[in-house]
Structure formats: structure tokens, C-alpha cells
Image (cartoon, rainbow, N blue to C red; front, side, top):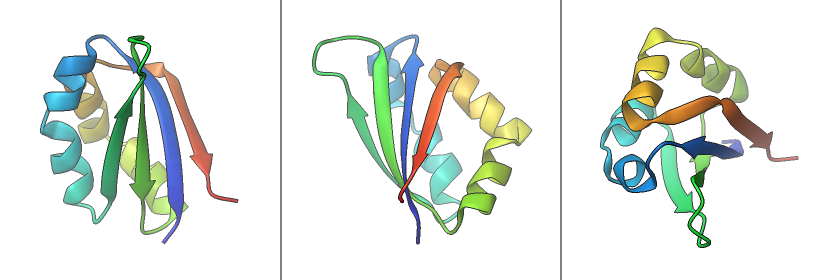
Length: 86
């Protein structure tokens, strides 16, 4: 199962951290998620995802449901960076 690091910025770190949407979205698709926040207090956050495969992740992120979940959590999609395990 591939491991992916995801970095992005959010409007409100506390709201993002406390939101159930991320787990609802990824958990329903067999993806495990660990969350991280910048200790310096910026709006940068990160995730470690264990995904079924990279193609499935790309398909998931291209859905309207993913866009709605990101909007709900205040994710700034233009800042999204995904790093695939080499």
C-alpha cells in the first residue's frame, strides 16, 4: 500500500484539525490518515496517507465530493502538494 505525504494550507488550522470530513471521506475509501500541523503556528498542515494505489487517490481527489470536503475544511487547493513514496 503506497504512502503519500500531503502538504497544504488551510484557512483555520483548528477547524481543519477538528473536522470529521477528512476521516469520513478517506476512511470510506480504505485510506488511513494521520494529520500534522506546523508547530510555528502557520496555516500549513500535512497528512500521511496510506492509499490502495496512486491512481485511486488521484481519482478520489478529482471528485466533487473531495472538492466539497476540502471547501468544508477550509483547504486552499492551490497549495496542495503530494509526495509519493519513492
